[in-house]
Image 1 (cartoon, rainbow, N blue to C red):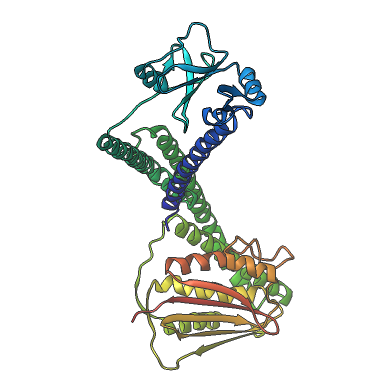
Image 2 (cartoon, one colour; image 1 turned 45 degrees about the horizontal axis):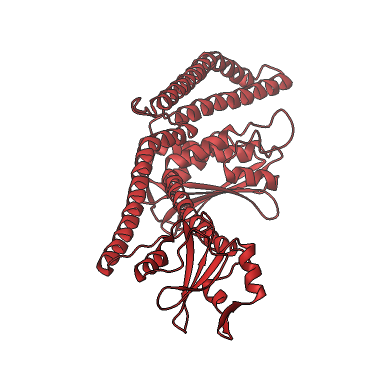
Length: 455
């Protein structure tokens, strides 16, 4: 999945999670308020029904026990008992300003509302009397309302509709906002990714994030200018070195072949020639890897014979005068079979030449080098192996990771800087292939390269 899309998907999921958490927290708070409100009722409170059980008729007189009267006084409340005619037949601390007889209209009124300013609780007893408990103003809140059932159903449907409409609007606005942010941020994130890979892209310097786009464009321009300056400097230096180096190589070759010189002088001239050729090769590798890195070197793809290219690379090394302490062999995995691929033949020759020379350079005591070419699992395969000193396991891991290696050997100043292997990796990548490094048994180095094969 694209990293940019993965980022915004995580963003959406996190916002949805926050919304769900918000919903659950609010439900929990509402439940806590309801439970807390029910628990906040004083322990000593007494309902009209419970209090009514403590008022009984004894010897023709209504009386309340001491426990009920004590609780009534603690709450600053009063009580009265009305008979069927609305007359007060018993009372306790009934305020002086209240009547002692009530009509049915009065009873209906204070049962649902207040008795003057006093909130009251009412309980109809089984003996058809009415128990009324009154409390001080401001201690209780009474509110009566009634709704017709059709209206109640419509109101419930309306509440549900409002809830779902709000939920839909939240989700819609969230997705719309995320889409706008994604549209603005995607080019920026993509530009940062491209910049990290060394590919600068031009961003539109408009919209809400125009300043960020402009800053990225400036960074891309700086990188492009810096890369061009470096590439031009390398090309200039290489060009300036090539001419005097050719003169050095020419004179060194003449001195090496001059039979009139002493043997020691001819040997020294040979060393100068070989080191000069190594320097020329390094300069060529530096030029080529720079041009490949900055896409200055076009890859001319055409149909080539993979086996023939491999055979040609071995022949060129042998014809250049390979020293006797080295043995170079070529094998075909499918003898006599032509294996075609779409590639730049010149770059492939350079790649194989670098790998063979790498084995030669890092094994000055001599070694046996085998290049085998063929086809496996529908892909072109080539393996270059030697029985030399090999490579340390940690360096093998670094090579397979594609890390920059200063040298594949620990040691002296004559060790190469790994530019040849970097060039090999670049050429393989330019052909959509793979390269892997491994050790040989009992010692040595093996490099395996695979390239797409033409069907």
